[in-house]
Image (cartoon, rainbow, N blue to C red):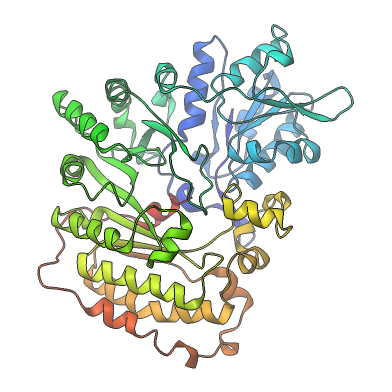
Length: 502
């Protein structure tokens, strides 16, 4: 089983990017599936290439040559690296069956089977389908009895078997935990765990699987798994646990019960997780989670109510500000990262500036951290599917490294001109500088000028005069009230947090 890293070609060589640049935690899904297959009696070699930050499978050559099946995980961001892994496997063992899993393979199963030297795709959850595929490869099960599979028939035409129903939460909690005992000590700062799957909401830019559905593990079952995984924290460099749920805070009463059970067992985890604005408005949840929180992401996304409505966040700017106020009162502002998406497909420059003014005011008034990111067309979201239906984009755009730096993808995803994007970046420069002066021990505002614009559009061709009126961002950022000060906690790596965004 192969876990490809997120890589990009920079200065002629492949280097890890985003969350894999800092190797935040082992990839939960593939480690858990490896444990599940071992529990079913299979011999499994797990090639965690995130550790090496490369697609080099040479250290696993013997295992590949002896394998009956090779599984490779895929996300859209990691697909170029996964594609290289497919090529490497084929060079080492021409005839071994290769199966792809993960969200990218699920979305584009026919396309991948028709264009790359693979044999199978598992669609959706793999806990039932992957063991069944192993039985089919071993000759003890028919392909029709293998659920959630896409394969080729005798004529080479792709076909699908029935899709297995979503696993109930009680079934998920019965599966073996990821075996982190083989993770080299000190490679990852933390370990991963899940307490639920899916999200009951459907934000238009989100590519998360299982939107409009949510399955939560029982409180006791989750804390049992948490306690077991905590035994491996000595293998980490920082000792935190990342809850990989799309939204951990959805059921605040459940979260409070989890915390009470943690307290009863005298555990002391430090969590990284995702939270919703509307949930952190509740004092009981904030007070319960506070002592166990290292860092969390709050999806704010827009700084004007019409944008929030169009995204589908189910909240308002008033509530977002109330959440920031509540977190600051609880002393959690330096651990709260409010994310905002700039340049959504309908947005004008004025819309983007409205979001930035609102975000800067939150930072200045309450001290919360900001993650400001330009919209990127990632497969799976409603916005992406709409663009695909119009023929603007296709799966082939994601086959090669650096697709998120492709000028076509960038400029067909947002309405702003390159000049307007540059104006926004210039307006933000002094804001970011002021924040760095004020918070010398950490980065409180994460923002990067888009590489596409910097690379392909010369500053000399862009007018600075059009930036008039944007200077008010600086005035907002200076308006820091008395009493909002650092609480002296450990610095937070904002780059790591920004990498968690879909």
